[in-house]
Amino acid sequence: MKLSRIVSNQNGVSRKRANALIATGRVSVNDEVCREAQQDVSEFCAVSVDGNVIQQARPSRYLMLNKPAGYLSATVDDLHPTVLELIDSTLHDDLHIGGRLDRASTGLLILTNDGNWSRRLTEPEIKIPKVYRVTTEHPITPETHRRFEAGIWFEYEQLTTSPAQIEEINECEARVTIYEGRYHQVKRMFHAVGNRITSLHRERMGSIQLNDELTVGQYRSLTAEEIASV
Ligand code: URA
View (cartoon, rainbow, N blue to C red):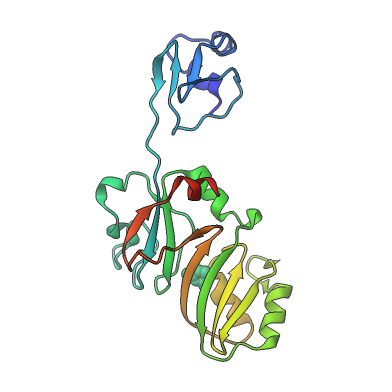
């Protein structure tokens, strides 16, 4: 929300008066004077006028989970256990998933209560690389490399996927890098070339890498550096 709106949301403060308070240096955001009335200020920032807090900073949360197979990337479900059940309930408040994994898929799953941040991580237009280790039913052919690099046509969305890279580990195992993160994207890309994924494990999103020390089902907070990298 714009700073002038936050200040004028106080009882009896007009937008004009709010702008004057800001321009004269009486308004602080996270303890620093801010003179920009049009500055976007999130709910995770504290705002004060003359030292009196008018908006408390909401605690932000950024977690990485080593997702086990069998858990749904959802917050509630009647049938299957959800990844939220693996997270301490004191941290649940408004947590959502930044880039789902299918129930059978494993590895890096990010949960946060910061919607602007998770949008930057997952929006197909922003093209953050997502790296998956996959095993396939049939050998990965040179034609698969070529088709992935050229982009695969998705009829439902009426679009061609961004060029994706395959780094082969052995004939039925590879690291695949994609840049969007559309519904079942990796599975659908292999399906389009007549192959099938038998396991899929996410290792990395941008520069956020699944930690070796996180055992399956464990989670930790992201570091300040990881958060700032998005
Ligand atoms: N692509 C898939 O097909 N499945 C996932 O879980 C993630 C990416």
